Image 1 (tube, one colour):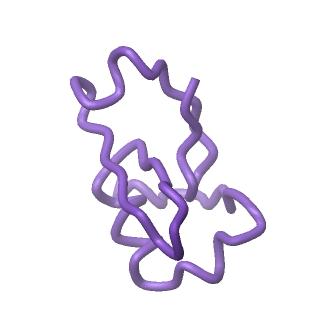
Image 2 (image 1 turned 180 degrees about the vertical axis):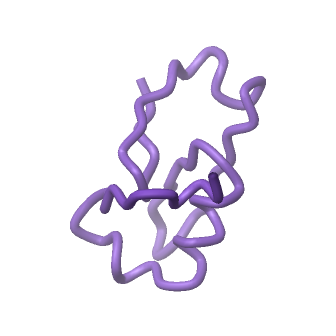
Length: 62
């Protein structure tokens, strides 16, 4: 099970990329994201998520 570094959504590893999940490596650690919106939020301020996901209303642009 993978967990989005921004919102905390859990994702099955087997279907992660099929469902549009993304990842990146920052400071030697791989982070996973449930959507491009979460990846973008992380890239703007990675330090905000160093202690774990920070669920926010409407963070996926809905």
